[in-house]
Image (cartoon, one colour):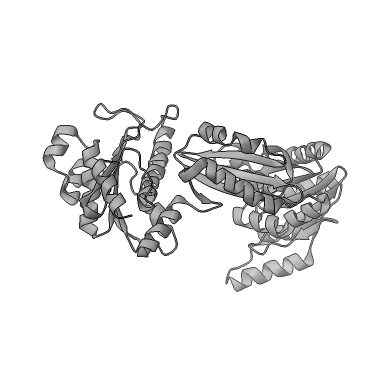
Length: 431
């Protein structure tokens, strides 16, 4: 079954809002074996939407639109679908009743404009929206089916999962498909693909590589008879080929893996951050139950704060500046001592867009202080992703991943790049 996506909204067309709905829909449909052949963005104009829907159904079996179903006068997807179907918009009495009831329960006054959400193309099927006000619509058009979903992401996802996906699967008679996504850290996409060449050659198996800064997700798809059973074997082989670079699966974040490892050991961590400005702490505190393992952190951005609050030696800062491996190590030890945790994790470096004190953009030092006073410091030179202000965001994100992966490997007793002999001996003594 072929499906095209049509996202509606001037804010998307002009770049004011990132088109996350199309990305989510593409992944979701692919996960269910539905082929997405095209994705288009259009503005809030009836004739443009009509032309885009009609064109999509000349090529595909169905088109899924998002956006333009709200209460304001620039929400015109309903009008466009009615025009494409050659019918009028009619007021749905049940939708109006539910809308009035919802507004009354919230203690608000119903604005007449809001009743636009109760207007539907004649003959359309209303798709219940259990997460919000604007319903979805299913409209039969001459070329195929149009599914119209709200633009609010959690409302769109709810209707898609509860109504549209099951219906598409039934219509298409899709074959049995099993999928699994594995997550890796600090391994290049090309390296991952090279190691998995033999898996790529397996019959009925497809691999998709989804890179993020310092991470690569591998989506494994197995189709055909006994897909679920075969998937288990394929996953095992992928894990074997990639080794300890695989840190989790599905939506399991690196921070959650670290949190679980700390829980199992009844250990804790504190952070001292310079260039990341608290991003590592935000990741660690986002895991459910994080208070049991993450004590807190210090954002020591200014050089003097590193000295006063973290105890980084003044002579070290005077001689080398804030970007130095010994500074990272001292920051890690300082925050560990200050907050009384098992581990201290610290980062300092240059996120860009300009060099600092002779250090090029992408110079990052990560310090880890653990039991016995051992220090582990890695100093990767992160790749610079192009030029311009976007460098900062990417390098900061890469630093977060590198730091959390360093801690994960230390907790699990895995080899750590750049680890000192003292730290390695201490880790091995502790098992």
